[in-house]
Length: 138
Image 1 (tube, helix red, strand yellow):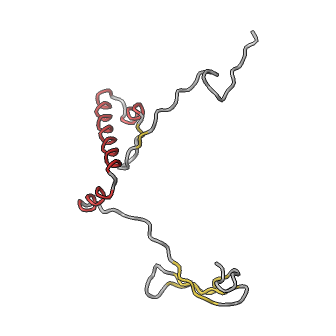
Image 2 (cartoon, rainbow, N blue to C red):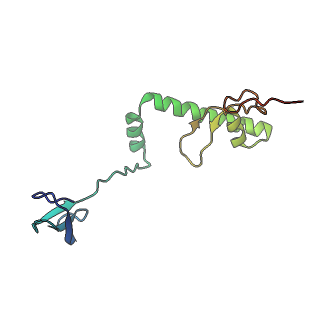
């Protein structure tokens, strides 16, 4: 930190929690240039927002979420339901069916991600712009 008087570097002399608010730390600093002492009050911002698992909090979350995001989530959950039904009919794992459809399966209750299908792999120097065509001498 820099000194407000001379803009030189400072060092911490004393550090303690605030008397009224435990999330704030009071640091006593001393300037290395002019030897002036001053206090700083440092705290962190609480950025984690936890959501309760109740009807009221779910209704609030739905109200705050944009409609296009909700529509996409509902569409992807419907696709997962259809993938489960197809996996049951064919005997394949659900993740294989979802990969074949271009859907990235996720663990737990996190939202599903729609992934584009991978590009086809070129056969030995066919259609690849990165590798030059090799000429045969025979």
